[in-house]
Length: 304
Image (cartoon, rainbow, N blue to C red; front, side, top):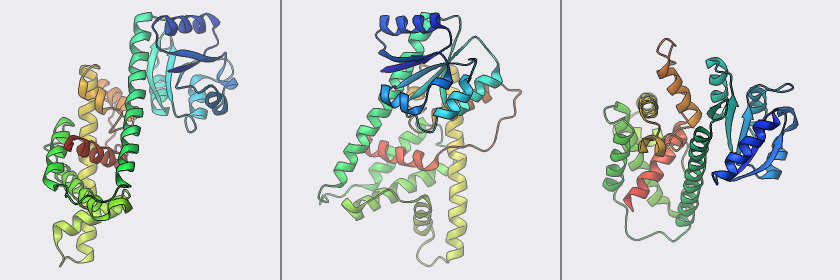
């Protein structure tokens, strides 16, 4: 992995570089003494995968720097600071930072955290590779051997169980969505593209209510189904965040926290669950389309 370090202390930059090289974690491709000196063009030029950034700097602090870079940078941010303010750390996580390294620096902690970051990047790259392979597959002639909806439903049920949603009403909607998507993929062959969410919910509502259903009834069912799925996704987010709080090395947490969800949302939920005195927001910002796409892709992979 390629690392870019932003810290106003040259000794810290030197220590981080030494640890990264000694632990074979990757290569330091650039440094800067303040966030004001860094932009997305520089990170792209350096091919940076991970930005290690100090929270407090004289010209532009870590929070403002992440805010300015987040939209254009496709890699990961890791905060470094001796400040332990929950508000500042929480804001960093909300903006996209995935981990927090405390000062004074500890080689074991840094090695562990950066290994985790590297693993998540590799998982994302693997998923992108799988998606490309699936895209190649859809360009092939349509197979005469049909997929069995039952198989993808069984695979989906296993994933939904792992995600802690099996008792939620929305879990059945998600299984129906998998069946709908599989049928659409087989029906359209190479012309298949992932549908809009509105099309998906309209499709499963029509299947549930039958041909004689009126438009108003379908619209009502679509809205109810979407609400059930949102509640199920929020339950899955809580389940995965709870696994992370209990054991950061839990295989399910490692596998699902950054594939089905945006990890920043998982981390935010972990902070909410950890701080019982803080009001937990009832509205999740889960990316429903991403969740359903990943669920469909993972279920199809399990079928193989």
